[in-house]
Length: 248
Image 1 (spheres, rainbow, N blue to C red):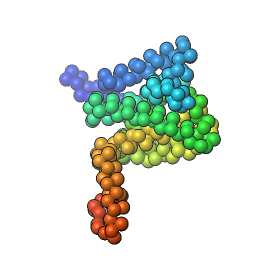
Image 2 (cartoon, one colour):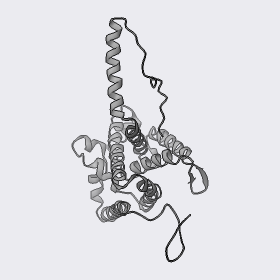
Image 3 (cartoon, rainbow, N blue to C red):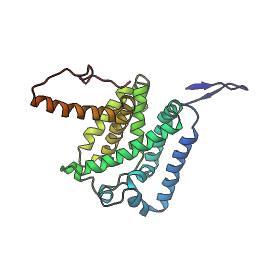
Image 4 (cartoon, one colour):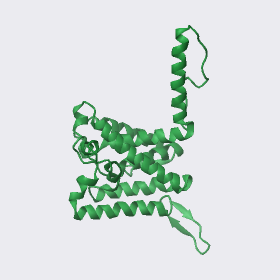
């Protein structure tokens, strides 16, 4: 619970604070699509993420699936998580960066879901004709960012057990990983959850350490080392070649 001062009177507010304009727009769009698809269910397979359809040209689905939900509890918990974790991140990042992160991770999670479905395993192939819907990919990415910035903030798992945010994300990541190896998955697109975590991590790490530049550096060193081996030339590397980098 937080207290927000007022020039007229003291007041109390639960949660991370007021909903910003950007969050209002995201929540309103999700709620609107929830009611629209409720009246016209034929839109779900058209706007939801169906990996085999994406492969055949329905590429818009990697973005539109984020605004569809399967039931009242589904949208309620996703929008609650969006408000709880997104409010403080947007306040810290700014609206432009927040929205960019949200859509990049949500779309990235959708793309990884399609790629995951192409793996030559039964648990992956079962996803090819499934309809994946929900903002969970982007929400999981927000959860990851929250844990990286506020690792010791308590999160109440199942609203009962307070655990540090970093531990909570680890638990959710492990659950998503092992659940994605199951053919049924309990009706939940765990591969998309895992994709959101992965894309979110790469996005944040890339923003701090210039991931593209780092990949170019590694590629050039690989080429140089191949040439040196031909002439038996050896030299030392950078002090950070021990892969001990951390995300701060």
